Length: 284
Image (cartoon, one colour):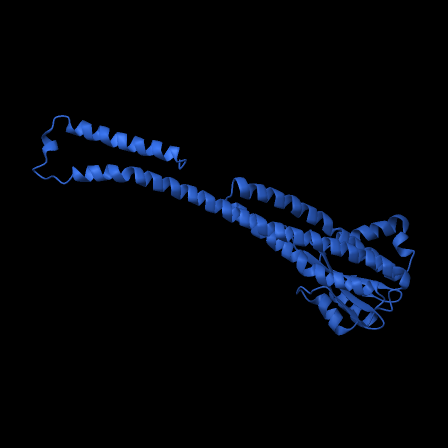
């Protein structure tokens, strides 16, 4: 926000200093609504499409809603603003009704733009789940944690945003006409659906994490099982080798002509017998 913007909000519209400060601040503010009698100050969140990251982030849209004006403030370009401006340029329809309907169009478009992100996260979760089940890797855990962070970023703003729309749709604010309230109720219904989908994704992410941990544990168990079986096979062979490595003078087998080859045959028979036994027990 430039100095000219601050001057416009402060000295021309004479908005409250705390509301202007929220617009200037780079900190993330939760969705909220403040009633200053002559106008409403509303903060809602949408998807930030301008951050190149594997974790979805939200961005703020601040609205000053008065009787005959609507002022918006946002740090990054928003598709909702661009879409409404495009409709205004084409046929002027968003400007044909009262200003509370214009605010509804902006918020409604902002909320609608969340759905493609939800669908993308749902597709991503299915891919991660298949990977966690069949071929879990270290990168799989990273993808799961990124998915969980994306879901958290959405869920922490959906609930307060839903309550804001609930208040706007129930006649709690004089600046929202009775005719417009039902339209805000429609946004509320969309947010309820998004919240349900987000909770479903959160549960799926937890399930995927459990699947990943189980798959890694099973693979570790298989490795330990194989190492244990190999060690078991070599224990009797090592025992035999150890006996004939003691180098006592009074060991009759040491003078036997075929003793060395006989011991090798005995060791091979023992090892083969153990392998066959393990296979019959389905341990191999």
